[in-house]
Amino acid sequence: MQGWENRVVTDSRIDVDAVVVGAGFAGLYAQYRLRQLGLTLQGYEAAGGVGGTWWWNRYPGARCDVESMDYCYSFSPELEQEWTWSERYATQPEILRYANHVAERFDLCRDIQFETRVTAATWDESAQRWDIATDRGDRVSAQFCIMATGCLSAAKEPEIDGIDSFRGPTFHTGRWPHEPVDLGGLRVGVIGTGSSGIQSIPLIAREAAHVTVFQRTPNFTMPAKNAPLDPEAVKERKARAAEIRQAMRESRAGVIVPMPEHSALAVDPEARAAKYDTAWECGTLYGMVAAFTDLLVDRDANETAAEYVRSRIREIVNDPEIAELLSPRGHPFGTKRPCLDSDYYATYNRDDVSLVDVRATPIVEITADGIRTTDDHYELDAIVFATGFDAMTGPLLGPAITGVGGLRLRDKWSAGPRTYLGLATAGFPNLFIITGPGSPSVLVNMLVAIEQHVDWVADCIAYLREHDVAAIDATAEAEDAWVEHVNQVANLTLFPIANSWYVGANVPGKPRVFMPYIGGLPRYTDVIDGVAADDYRGFELVPTRAPAPEPSALPR
Ligand code: N01
Image (cartoon, rainbow, N blue to C red):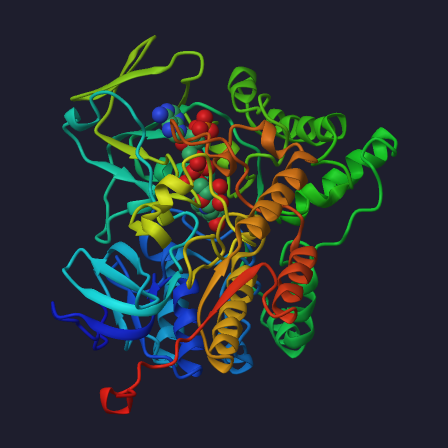
């Protein structure tokens, strides 16, 4: 638990203007903005402190792959000036220190109850309010419910027989213990080669006696080129902070990336290779993707980038067979989220690291002392599950959310998430989602997306209060049109082809829907700002009822 004094609610029901679920970057900023409006608030957070994803993901090597000076709040120029990041890509402990600093500096925890999970939210039609319950027995009535629950916060263990029979310790990267974990001298198995696996494997390899990586799908990863920040560059950047922040908000992905001019197929092979060399060396997530105009929409153009990465893998990895196993061939470059790494491919040159292709020889079971595939049994002392998350919808469908007429969100979304603008879902009035499905969210710098959403929601609530509106609900027509638009834009790209968490492919039984909005921030900003300017077009606004007259004032 943090040292702050929290408001602990007893089992009697309390009334507040808004409940904010989550105390990650979205929840903290929501506390800040809504308090500014004079709202009474109750926050709930399942973790023991602030920071959201950075509170939970403490695995070795965890760091952000958006540059630290871009991956932080912009709402307070003073905060931006006083905080100085130490590295180009901040580590998890440094980001968590930042979250704690912000919380303390703006006194954001005074209305947050930690170690408390919201279990249910039920719309009370007669009161036009949400009735919210927690796993600690709290009951709260709130006019607004803000779901700041994150996109990648529902950790997912793999469905493997015998998972509970393993005698040694097991860890999930998204639920890493808070006490130090000593893997020294152990034979460690790692399942999963997404961002979490790719970041942690090189560090685990340095510590463990032997690492066996169980890879189902190789991913594209590029060198992060991480380094300490140059104090002069930091000074210069701070001097131009306002201008840069504005440019980030107006950019396609919430970070400033030089926009490409040419098709990958319109330049000769030498020019193309030179462009990819520069992108590879620049050490950013977006460099390669933005090298040419058509990498994410044209299969042949994409293949040039994919083959370039494979050629780099062959250069780095000594054993040609291992290099080939590490080379992604089943999905276009960039359509599963690419990664940034430090020494990932080179780690496979170590004698104490082995790679098992579990696409060719699937895992059959976890035994008391290891992992059995169709081909072999691997003896292990510890297992790390770097198996990802039930992304985007998982955190929203965890609590039982029930809207108008008893409609359950789980039923409404049984064929995939349906939202209006990624901010609201029809039939669930006054429920706002921060960076929800149908918004750019995970495709852009999350901090930019979070500030945009919280600002939009806060402005909306201010409008409702000014205009005596009790409830706001997306109309089914506006929602249908938005969902269709989100799908149409996604289908213009190569993204839906890949079995990624963007389409829910990593969760058995999850409906296959491309969840984020891929139209880019500028287009999205125009839409949501236009909706607000047009008195919340596409929403139905229910006026506050006049209070019931006093009995003495009733006509006799
Ligand atoms: O999860 P993932 P993650 N048997 O879903 C494999 C963000 N993030 O935690 O691809 C065998 O990407 C699975 O295989 P497959 C970032 O947005 C950011 O790594 O489904 N393997 C895959 O290889 C990222 O994209 C940062 O075939 C199994 C892996 O597990 C997102 O979080 C750092 C399996 C899961 O990869 C998620 O990343 C970390 C099974 N039964 C995360 N089940 C940074 O900012 C799953 N897999 C740097």
